[in-house]
Image (cartoon, rainbow, N blue to C red; front, side, top):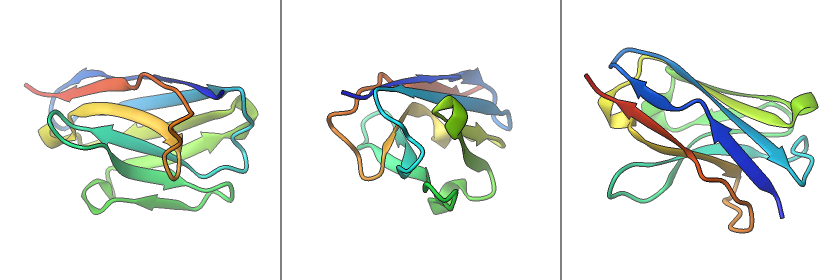
Length: 115
């Protein structure tokens, strides 16, 4: 079973930045399309950014220009650089493969954007 450890979340003011990290054990991530998902309070989980094994990236419209997904295969780690954060970015952020792998585990990291 693949274990994922997300980190880097926290409380930040609107307009601020955070960098999330996700490190995996149990599988080599390098050929796998990975994504960052957000679950806002009372809402379903949604994919906000993805990166393929060839480093092609895709973003949901409301994060384009503000979030950047990247990966370091040598560290088996995926990152999400978040800037110009808005209150509506609040939620628990998970990394996982795309599409979501229910057999992959991670607790997520909480991001709260508030004054």
